[in-house]
Length: 156
Image 1 (cartoon, rainbow, N blue to C red):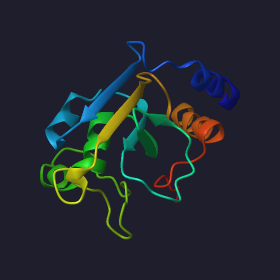
Image 2 (tube, one colour):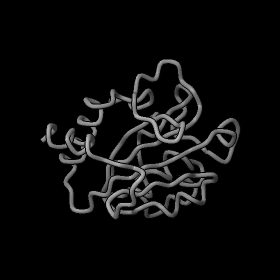
Image 3 (tube, helix red, strand yellow):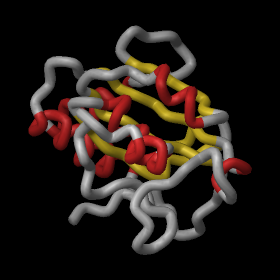
């Protein structure tokens, strides 16, 4: 399965519109609400440079710092990038134990606040609406094999 997904990553063209791929250039937290809600594999990119980031995937001058998957993609992205807002509105939403960590021991970030509001952000979503968790996890492994694991993607 990983081989097939690696081949998929070889064939993607982010300059061509696709119903299966959503690209969101995010300037503020509210724009995350435009994200696909269903199952997916997703990438979080920024223009902020992390010297130790060995991931080779770049898009418009931004580099992937995190890759993940979810059954509830929009909610998951909100938990990563608008963490305070997500947690305040957290009734009837999944509680995520682990979110994007830029600073040690700080779970999730808020792109409307310093220093993150000065960074450029892009989300790339590969829609996988009827996929199982196993298939989405295989997408993560295939991505890492093809492009190397992003700096902030740390498995427990």
